[in-house]
Image 1 (cartoon, rainbow, N blue to C red):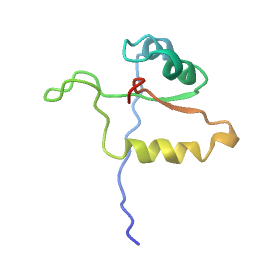
Image 2: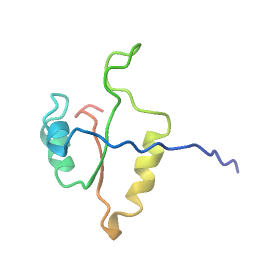
Image 3: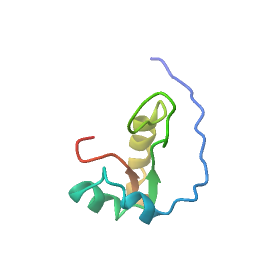
Image 4: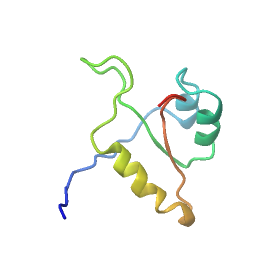
Length: 84
């Protein structure tokens, strides 16, 4: 078994939940699910090379780890579009 260690940086954001919920790439069920979240994992905006939503490596693993604490009140939402 291999274990990969990685640093996670948590940054304070000036954007509110409402800002992220109003994004064009979120619609219908994706937006409704995020409305019940109390933690949003958001993409990087304005990447210099990649056009579109960009997430740091290990984002999915971090999101899955957060799901383990759902019963303790953590409601993590990953801001991806309906096709994401």
